[in-house]
Length: 136
Ligand code: CMP
Image 1 (tube, protein in one colour):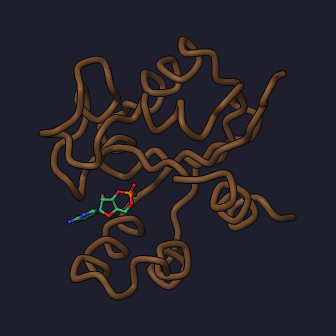
Image 2 (cartoon, rainbow, N blue to C red):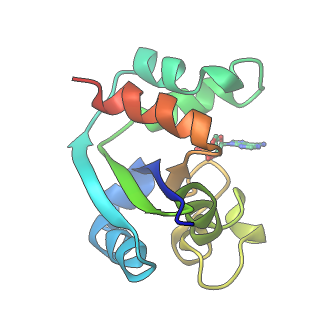
């Protein structure tokens, strides 16, 4: 049985700033993802705080929100069989130092903060995150 899923992907400011968005989108397409929605935006820090609310008790929360709102980002809805898990595999570990060869974070990530991409961690959170950016 097929299990087509949607997931939310964000190309973060460090990657957009280095004009890596085209290359990163190619990596998604080469792995069989369809980009069904896409927009380039810059968000306010208050919006980043809402988006990352699950992390609000973490010591890195303030820096994380300041960073996500520091420059343009590309937000996308990706579609594919098992999109949530496959996207996490393609992104690689949160810390680029721990990421496997061939992953986006290994290739382009600079640090645990500037790790080039965000991806939803579950089907449930994917729905919430897609609504956050694409609810009309
Ligand atoms: P992301 O997948 O966007 O989700 C939360 C982000 O917090 C994560 O990627 C990292 O860029 C950032 N972050 C900063 N410090 C940490 C940490 N110690 N553990 C996990 N995530 C961190």
